[in-house]
Image (cartoon, rainbow, N blue to C red; front, top):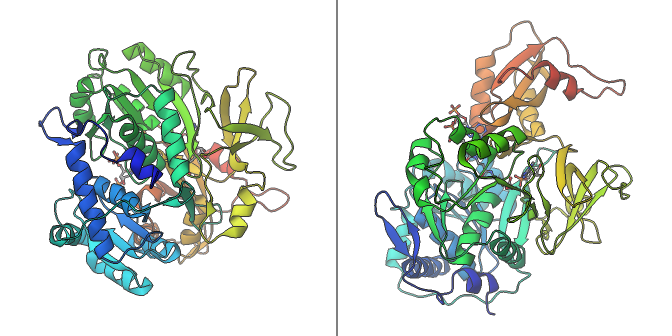
Length: 504
Ligand code: MLC
Ligand code: AMP
């Protein structure tokens, strides 16, 4: 194969008139043929803009058909695709564009003034694409482009994408994903979850993370199935479209939001064959409530940015609530002692390690970080605490990393503490995750003040400027001192206990 990922997901060898995207309510429909042709034109425009194979293209745009064209175009042109959360501030973008050494940033026209400074600073070009994908200088460049693009030759081990994932040090790391990482995982999931051209996936996840992009989208492309493309999760729109879909992939918040709407019932899900949940723990209670309401047992799976998907509950067989199922075919798992790295006895808690074709190549420009987390023998240390039972079912019991997962988005406390600690009047801070009825978990900032008066509004404004909205603590509280153990380490568990009922 010339370009394995392109040839498998996009090459026009399929039923060309089949709908790739369609909306059962408005009647909008886009065939695979047209989608691939438009992507190909965009690939040619990227080449005309000077992008070479192996260059990185960063993009922060709304979810639209054109944003999917851009992904396909990068794969076709051999360009490393770096999608970024639309919530990131210009301050955050500055880091990503600089660190990734992106040659081109595609962003919303409304942000072009502030992002122009960022791209100029880092010697990158800036093109724009509106959130609905209909206009912007990228679209102009595609219209003006007269050349065509042959799919660029790539090896399975060449980089296809960078996805940034935050770290406990507060500095985000670019996970380098190869063509084969993405390809192997999509093939495994299509087969395991029995996707076929008859499937219609109701797609409401963002397309800048593993779940919405590499799980949902790649699986549909690999299976030559269809998408109903939603720009976000809106309950009314979901309820309207569910009867026309066969599958849904979501974070637990999708399922709790559907369940909290009394219109959601068995009739609406009668054409559905599969509901998949992941990215955050699905409460066993949600699993049971969902089955009682719809007759469907949600299939929970577990993955990471660095590894794509690692485990899944079975398609046929027992989908056990509270577990994330078994290792995917071709993926090896082991549970090791946090300190020694030695295997722990069966059934005991340890840190989960993963090896397989799904595991990334390392962190971009961070050899030391890579060496800390990716062993020489190929096992990646996930930082998740887990047990594996005698049937091979994995249960995630906690995290050996200071991480909050809010509505499926990761929030690393250190990044927020760094911002809080810089604010006038703040002596020190601790950011903790507490249960939240909608997001599962959310961030709370606990502050110690240097003076008796502290301006929390000013602190909120400072956070707003620096960090994406989903990372903002949903509450700031001021205390006299932080609880510490005898080693002087902040006891976040004590704080979590104290504030656990703030949002439930
Ligand atoms: C939105 N807000 C959030 C938030 N999402 N705050 C904390 N956590 C979140 N996840 C903020 C908004 O900015 C807004 O702030 C307020 O909360 C209410 O927003 P909303 O309108 O209710 O949110 P909504 O737009 O409906 O989004 C909620 C959501 C979304 C759950 C649909 O967060 C989402 O799509 N999450 C999916 C994330 C995902 O794809 N994760 C996969 C990672 S890959 P304000 O202040 O303006 O009111 C991975 C690997 C794997 O983990 O295994 O899959
Ligand atoms: P990310 O770095 O955004 O890819 O998030 C990966 C993390 O999400 C994992 O390390 C887990 O902590 C968590 N995660 C993903 N899927 C699940 C799941 N089904 N249950 C519990 N945690 C999950």
